[in-house]
Length: 113
Image 1 (cartoon, rainbow, N blue to C red):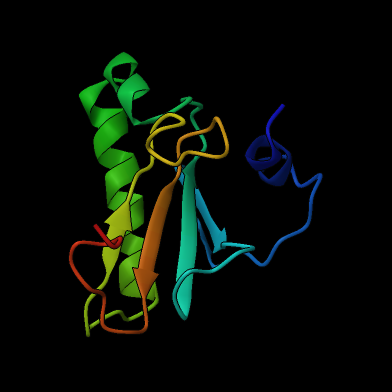
Image 2: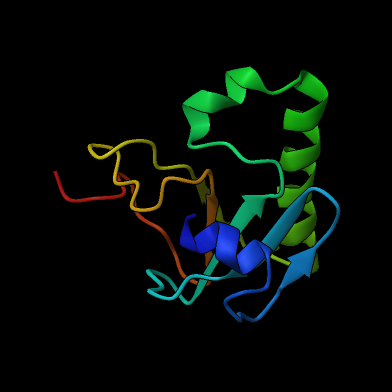
């Protein structure tokens, strides 16, 4: 069981930023920006590539939940949504999660080349 599944089952406490029937949002424990929120789906998927096993409706509901978190946080000055997939993509927990990054001007490319 991953740390995110333990958070979903309320076995590990966290500050819940937003929750609905499709997703749970909470602060990242190692924030990279002043606002760094993780949004995990309640339907399990290992990573973004595994979304092809979900129905289009389920994918849409999860994406809509991410949008609701952004609206809840009133991120009117901009934000970035990141999905890391696999070791080379920087994924550290084998459970699908979106990073919402905001609170400062974000550069491009996101990492020094």
